[in-house]
Image (cartoon, rainbow, N blue to C red; front, side, top):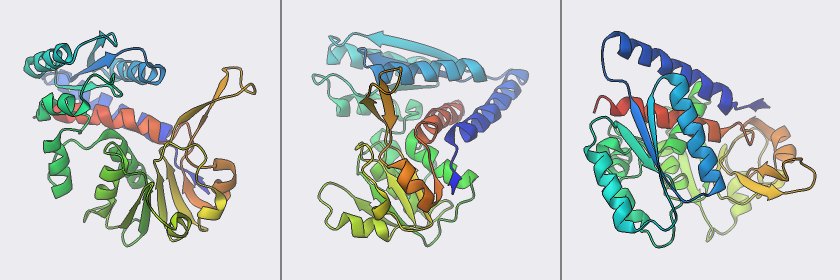
Amino acid sequence: MILLDGKKIADQIKAEIAQEVIQLKAAGKKIPHLAAILVGHDGASETYVASKVKSCEKIGFGSSLIRFENTVTESELLKKIDELNKDKEIDGFIVQLPLPNHISVDKVINAVDPKKDVDGFHPANVGKMTLGLPTFLPATPYGIIELLKRYTIETSGKHCVVLGRSNIVGTPVSILLARNAYPGNCTVTLCHSKTKNLKEMLLQADIIIAALGKPEFVTADMVKQGAVVVDVGITRINTDKNPKGYEIKGDVKFDEVAPKCSYITPVPGGVGAMTIAMLLKNTLLAVSK
């Protein structure tokens, strides 16, 4: 069993981007600038956005954090998005999800200029991804693909089962792994809450992408010997056993599944670390758009 060390690979990618920033500075070209809009005080979102800002500083990017309270109106948020769309200093920006219930996520996603949509959520970018055209890829699926690539894991002709059909992870990663490319050329089965015989499906999988958000859902009896398992799940579980008062669990019961795997991601330290690295890679790409 080999650990797919997302933190190590993410650090490599950030170092590569930092070198490109040095070259941009030396050539007198524009330095990439990433902005983030954060609404409210969700703990996970706060942590994630803080990591983005810190990563920008480390690799030499400019960064901006725009904060709003949960009481911000939809029109106020859309106005700020329009300002960022028009701001030539900002190369790419994200609106951190989730948003309060009174704000339409679809309206927000559609309001972002596709050329600055470094999250890869705009329908124009999703359409290009589906057609295999150059575009911003959603950061988490992009991170999964890059992780498989950097560990030279064979994907062609393999059966990949994706657990979860969200627009953020499950659906886009199923599209990417089915493409005529490397990593890709998989036969992909996209499973969800209505899927029957789920265990039987998983036992056929050469590659499992678990993105359900259900802690320790995938157990050893669902995984065949030698499978590659990528765990996207990250859930905070309250416990007295940890000084922090909680533990982070993935969608896979790691201790019992890992011995059966050829490769597996840890949680934390796997896909999560890759997500930020690929967001930075998208922002570097945005400078040339």
